[in-house]
Length: 415
Image (tube, rainbow, N blue to C red; front, side):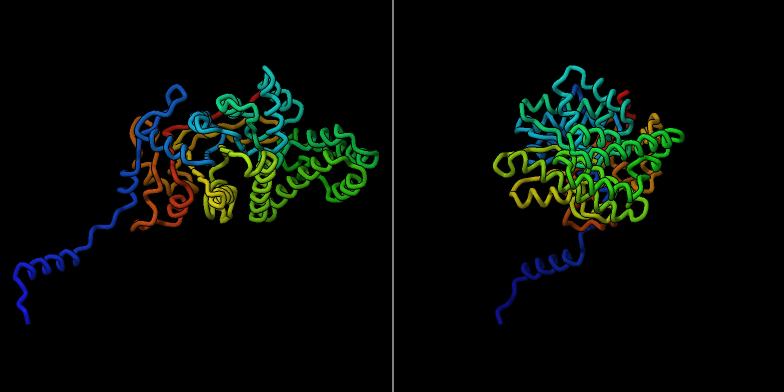
């Protein structure tokens, strides 16, 4: 047998010792610190080390999804900067957590010189008929994105159900569509019921007294037969929006998981309707989505549902396009909270580390940059040796980027 050189024996021995000494596993806290970058929005522009990461990611995506904390002043500012970044490569539409009717209303108001007053008048006539786009910061964001797109055919899409107080507005639109005598009679009957429900709800602010929740099934069934008999197509579409929204609200009180699933399906169907009406795959489209954060997860969200965000991610994959999912939250501050029918918003302080739904984000809060917003690139935390709990595993694979804002301030209703 040929002799083995001593130098080779020494090298093999060293390799053996090295193999027996495993490298320390990375920690979540350490990985977050390495993936964190300061970010600011100054004069509407992204600045800081995180800006380049964000702009590059946006440039590579056809669909950008902002999962947010609602009713703030800061997140619409961030949304406007994202619109600016998307516009250079083409921005064709923005989708909001609002109904198609509200989106159409805002789209039309952009053609006027008094869009804020127009929304104020709608809200005075039909309180609580619009979600989110009746907030000045959100309405301003829609106007900004439309302007910065520099496209005459830029569209505002509303993918959600009708809001709680919208029944009076829906019924008025149904009548304006000139239905036949049977449908007209049924709609007039529903209008009388809706006005009585509004007066009852206004006494206490209790939204469960409103028509969309309190109208008896028998009245809806009777109206359905009449509308099917001689309602116009526009009347039938509006009635379908009313009844679909009613079902979602009723299920929320009895079977919340079914309600969430129905709502998710509605948003997916509405997206496809808008997409196909805009030319489908025959035209290049880049779309910005702005919804509550639980709606925009890839995979299964905290409600154990496959919601809109997962659908868009898969839709983009099927097209060979890219989707970018950005989670934008505040660490603390003041929330604007719905306080009842035709009531002003209520303001409540919050601290994320005290919130049962978000306190698991404390490692990111501990790793934030001082004196600025912080962007975390979550993509680098995937497929490694990190020992992630269920919440962190969901967000690391459900979102690509996380933006933490030190303090949020509440937005105001248009009045």
